[in-house]
Image (cartoon, rainbow, N blue to C red; front, side, top):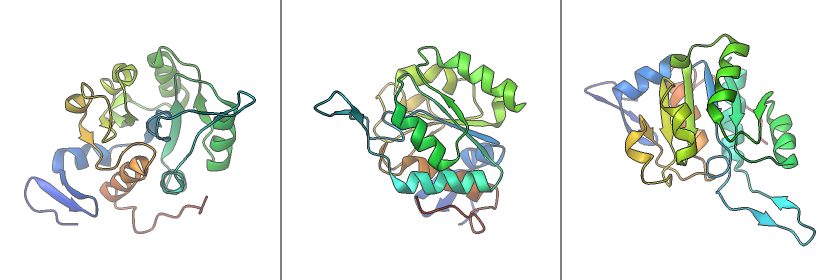
Length: 188
């Protein structure tokens, strides 16, 4: 990592120093699911069951945050049993599903964890995410987010949703807090 000038070089490319400064204060990462932790596609089986694909790199990054003392929460507009299972596997205990108004879940999570909005990073992909993104210390859009969301975000990942974008953000948070080299996750 190069710390000269207005940008900091990372393995993902240069990152504006102001983004790194915001990431340094993060105590809670909140993720959307569809289009962020998954590729945004919903696969339907013959019996009506819903299937999603999750990237193991995102899972590893989340585990690294959790083992480094940074909380992780999920706020999603949809509900799916498979998400309960994925969160259990990852160790995520703060899961809000079926949230048409994500700001209500966001405020509940802030109260529950005694965290200030400025200490939160939120990663989203669509306009439903903006009300929360506009309140947090570090707002992040995935590379393939809705075009109206991209210019509003503090940081846009170089990697698309469901392809490792969350891992990119996890690494940025850990790097900014000098925890990346010592971070330990589980291969899941």
